[in-house]
Image (cartoon, rainbow over all chains, first blue to last red; front, top):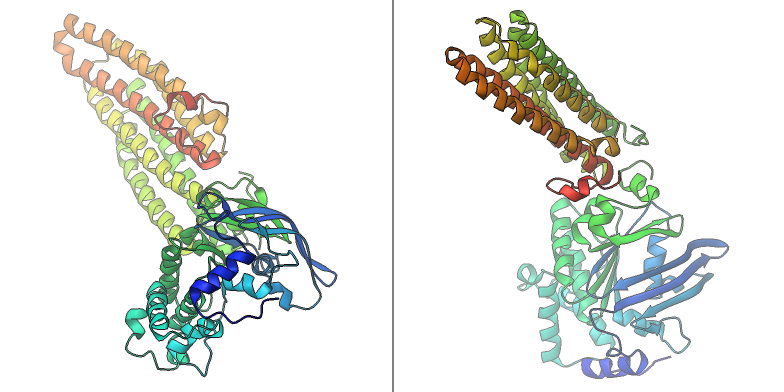
Length: 280
Length: 230
């Protein structure tokens, strides 16, 4: 288990590379994740059943399906977040750039550093300012260089399309922002530590339409730098933002492919019936 | 149509209403084509006037279908087979309107012909009329029954109508030289044959839309794929 505090982002990356080599398979052509025969149980209940899927680099992959189909559980297993739920059991493999995420030598905290997550409800730290919220991850990792922190603060907020709106109010509480701004603040916080993947669990479901459109635009923009996996109940959103779509039903991966094909001409009847609203 | 019903009743109703209007439009268009044939072959002046008047009803239905289609797209954001079906229905409706337009043009020219002594050659258009109406009916059936195999047979039958048009045009042009005082009447017959040829084109288009709706395959302008297995 890693306990060392790291003084700079470069040394963080060096340490990460020792644990999960970045360069070995980080090309855009190879998959970011290779999931093989993954099954997940909560106690006796099987939430995900024998899922095999490759998630490519620098693409947006949407996971759709009715409530309880295992899509959020699947998402969380990509950064071992589901382990926070008691009595969870996993079978199968999740390879991140060729490295088995569930190998005993892998530190879950390190996985979550490199595979960031944005949740359904925006959750800025209530006692922190906008700037503190963005930089908290870096500070916890031992980065205190003010110039570096300022650079990262501006870059993260710009990438989250929030800089122009908050640049004069960086010391105001994060909670003073609107719902849509708070969600973008959380995205800025997630990308401040420079993860390689962003997992998003219904990131716009609590937002109004305009804020939703801004988040979707941001997600499309983030694709240039990150691999994005997004769980959404909103099929129009999935068809608007994603390159690939996976349809889950009762814990199983029913169909996976190019989003245009899934929403235009799905191969499986279950997919067709779900996306056209004939069940769900 | 063997589609599972949609769980949203409003969406299901909207889809059914759109389909019902398209089939009503097809039925009226079919009647107009038959009336147009009767105008020419039976020299029925009354039907000539009815056919021209009925075109307005079909025009109104075309606008209604477009409005309904846009409403469904806006309200329900359909995908997959629902989206294809709605888009195809709107395109089918445009083709139906054009078929009805051809029927009205035939009726108007036939009415002019009834004012003159009957030409023996008018009867020669009978087989072409029958082929065009059958082709049109099969195109509507391929759309209504979602029968891409039937739809894929339409292009070759449209070509057969094209050939009938060419053959008739040659015969009628030759007759003009023999009876120059009836040139106008022969020209009307030539134009009627051309209108029927256009009916065949629109029927073929409806078949292409039926294939797209059922199989998500765009077979327009693709000679080879049209004959692929249905």
